[in-house]
Amino acid sequence: MNGRTGSTAICREHLCMASTMPATQDTGTPVGYAVAIAMGANVGDRVANLCEALRLLPQHGIKVLEVSRLYESAPAYVTEQPAFLNAALLALTPLEPLKLLAALKVIERALGRTEGGQRFGPRQLDLDIVFYEGMRYTNDGGLEIPHPRWRERPFVMAPLADLAGGDAGPAHQVRSIPWEDARRAWAAAGGEASLGSADLRCVLPLTNGRTWPWQGRTHVMGILNVTPDSFSDGGELSSVADAVKRAQDMAAAGADIIDVGGQSTRPGAEHVGAQEEAARIVPVIRTLAADERMREVLISVDTFHSAIAQEAVAAGAHIVNDVSGGSLDPSMHSVVAELGTPYVLMHMRGDPATMQAPEHTAYADVCAEVGAELQTAAERAIAAGIEPWRIVLDPGIGFAKTGAGSCALMGGLPRVRAQLRGALRGMPLLVGHSRKSFLGRLTGRENPADRDVASAAAAALSSTALADQ
Image 1 (cartoon, rainbow, N blue to C red):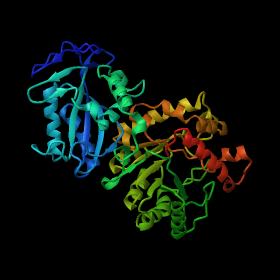
Image 2 (image 1 turned 60 degrees about the horizontal axis):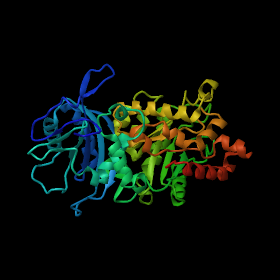
Image 3 (image 1 turned 90 degrees about the horizontal axis):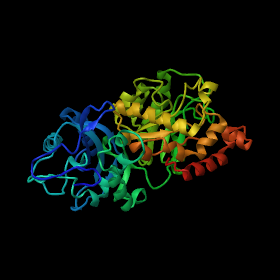
Image 4 (image 1 turned 135 degrees about the horizontal axis):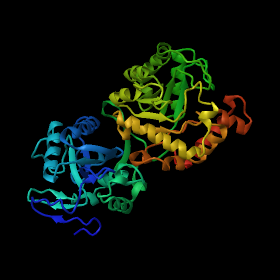
């Protein structure tokens, strides 16, 4: 007997379900057995293989409830092979263990994996059952549950811990999985402090199979406003050449990401049409993407229009940065899901014209409410097909916030993060505070160009307060 779960140890191919009841809804109606599945790939388009597996699982009776962050790991056991991408998922299924294993093998074969390859060698896709409810299971065919090597594999323990974290969400409701074992094992292996090296690190998937490791330090986003009316530098860049030169200068100064925007989002700014916005930013993005000097710099498009996001990514942008979090264009989430890019989801109430109205800037607890609203918005994005490992959250400093609210957020980023669940709790935060008006009021600097020292101080504060970008 397993003393923690009370489930019977099972051997050979006989399965007794009497001691481990399937997960239920609040009504008590069985909806399936809870399973934790580890995913890995190191051949072909690794990201596409994992995403396709997520798409195929429901077709085989495996309902995905939650997905971990995306990890890149050095190969284990057989070291002369490419690095792996790894993740884990929580799912419900009516399938008993052997039928579940058979379904996973079908999906592996659909992605190109063949039987009889090198053990621990390269593979297009690997799907392993780690936990099945709380039970122990073995059979003569080699299936053993829990997976016999999960405790020796950081690339399995880390994503399992993502699913186990937090006090709400699907994993918290599915108590039959030994989450506490997963948390303890990962903590004993070093936990979050052990991430960030080539051995094991979190990554954002880019297009064309590329990944971007984001852990280990704070990354800097340079803002490139190709607008006549932005609050800080509107009208300064009158040509594509001027904009590209500014981007090159920011990259040379240490910017990791260049965020290109053609629509001012300052309070009361005039809204321009999609055609004008595209005319401003697409030529700049296309030129930057073709510039060999910018090869290591990511390009982000700052837009809340899905059509602009499509054009910008086609021109070479790597990231979609949406200040509305999907609230201003109902097609944005589905379009980003199809594009396959990282998605910056910002918190804002209302729109740029109304966001500073009293009803939008009133909070009983700005950190808790912003965090909870970000979680809700992220869940909508995930439901539309954007994997959690592609989402970067932004608390929206200065957007539907008073000066006091922005200050509270700057000092309370850990409290914002604490409202998030599952993989989202560990994903990067983007904090955009540069030259904002609340810094001007704090320092007595009316001209935005005179707020750079205050912006640097705010960057240091946000970095020490657990912001990653």
